[in-house]
Image 1 (cartoon, rainbow, N blue to C red):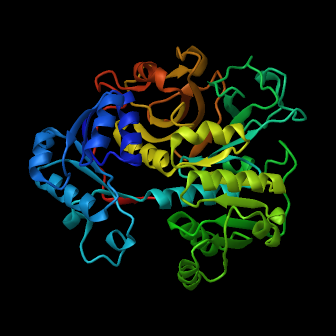
Image 2: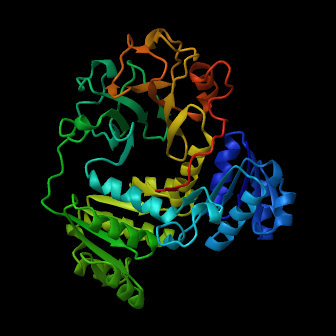
Image 3: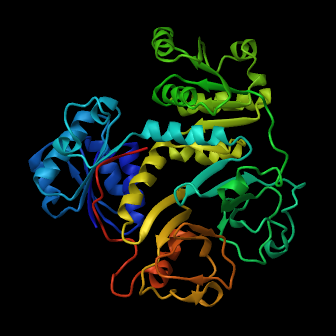
Length: 468
């Protein structure tokens, strides 16, 4: 697929790197000469210097042959103009990074069609949504939903006392409605396990199952019990404000929320937009201030100041205070190993989240949805099985599925099946598949229709929508 990316900043460069690794034909348009030169040297993509809101620049980039244009500059209006021009030049799919909700909510005077945007994305809103999802499940590190919410994935760090450790997976006494779908070793290695693989203390286990089974995971470890979850948000920027608003609007959340913002004038603005959140003016790295506000009593601390160094320092201080769960925003992906080294496992990267959301659009065809884990080291795909796929009418154990690919669940019409080796794969099934990017060719061989080419490289335009 030929894809043009407008803007080579954090989101644009992360997206270009991911798409290049997917063997897509990528052209980046960037008006900053130094940044354009850096991308050209570091990535296997074409780079054009200029403005994405210029017809001349777009034509030089090959807009007439492009199948998708993704505009992710820092300026909403530039992104929208680029999409408008792309639509006039018959580009099938346009994606715009837009922060101002007036452009995509019901208050907008212009429709999506008039704006020329098929899909709106908002990195900060995506990040706030992911953080809220983690907060709602306090016992685990990550949560994902599939099959319209009927299948749930949870991940958590395994300690030496867990009944999961040091025995082959086939011997574990797990409920039949769930399965160990992936293991992340302490050294960062990901494996899609087989029945004889072991989980060791310090590993991170990913368990997939029916939602009702994983809603109560006290059978794995002692469940956190609190009549009211105490949450501290450091930073009142776009992520912090949207997160506080989400927590307020969710009636199921029993939360006591404090938001700490350094800028006094902005504190007043935030306080006027929130109803239940206690807004405080203060420095997130001031030890005496944190002590005064009794940070040690917090169940969850969220560091989203917009500055990596501030987030790191605040997270280290919170860890010293004994905060049970710390969720930290990271802007520069090169800092991710540092966060992991100091024991901060809940890392939210707006850039990578946005890139992953857009990557889902590239993988059309039989791929219904996709999630990326740890910067794309592992992929979770919801795949539709076409009638002429190689695996149709075969038992899983005899379908030629290699190690490194795991069918975690089958959705058959309205029925959710946690499969075993003797379960059949039928045409029309939706499969939840765990794999790594290196296994894409094998996935194509197994699950694509014999006459339909690649599983991942088709593009189909869906209706206009806002990507969470």
